[in-house]
Length: 278
Image 1 (cartoon, rainbow, N blue to C red):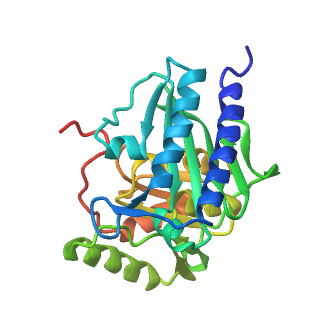
Image 2: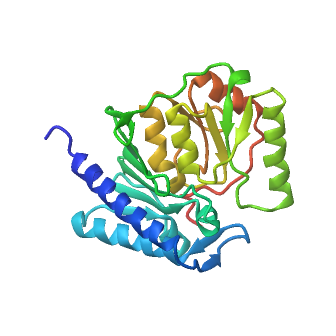
């Protein structure tokens, strides 16, 4: 069989579309909101409903596969990555956007086998943009091939990042001082759309030259990571070393030169890994 995972990818696209419909319908209703780790870390009934729908559908079709889902981890399930085919799911990436009806909300599905990402699907529901990336087969948005900007000069770059949901004064200080350092290089600007997956897809389209963040999770990055690399971009750790999906930190850039230049400026926020067992 030429491509054993193509059927899984087609199914992921179908499920992401279906999830997107649920999200768009929910945006018309009153949204009930719950708080997770901080007053800025939110979850809604829709997050939980969408994740349940995606996981139960996949379990029925691929009973031997494993799952890491944002809401199931929040409910106490582990997120240890094994060699087994694993679906890594963020039912609503950009929950705060969703709550405020700020129009960037994505369903993100990454598929990892032997700890290597085989494909990623990110569906930006309100914009109706379906981003896909398949190992060795390129990255696309609504069928159009994607290509990163290829920009190598940091002073000509537009960056994307997020403030994150952690409001501890020490962490905030580092987040803001990192932005200040990058702005003083100077870069053209820094943007924040409110969803890691869409931020990364914007780098894949060439609309932004790099994205960096610390404090996010594997489900924020798994779908979009391969979309970036298949569009010709690079993923690095914030230290400038190799990217690690479970490390909760990333630089996704249109070129290694820009990625490494950003890494030079960043003060690192200490984080507990996604696969930490305690």
